[in-house]
Image (cartoon, rainbow, N blue to C red; front, side, top):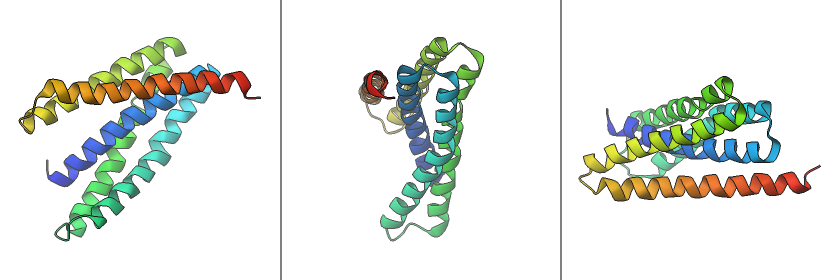
Length: 159
């Protein structure tokens, strides 16, 4: 896998997991509506995937002068594809299980994916995989906790 696709995979996977988990947990805490949570996942899978891909595109353009247009577009398309794929994967538990179970399954699924990818990247870079996995999972947990409390807070005053 070339560097441009690896960048898209890393960005799409990480953003897809953390953004979708945050949205899923927050919307569930605020609405307890399967339709709202599923709608949020679909919006993230489409709109946020395209938004992140444009961000990756601009970032690659702003980077090194030696980055070719082919590499830029490869990062752009792979970011779109992987963000869409990983975000959409969270719709499966929501479609299969009741919402509270789906949220727990989604959290486990997201942490498992993020841990596996973090471990693989750390090993490839010959770094301590424990630190890498801990760092990335800790950030995901902070997002999950914050969005849970934000969802609960919004539900107390929203009309």
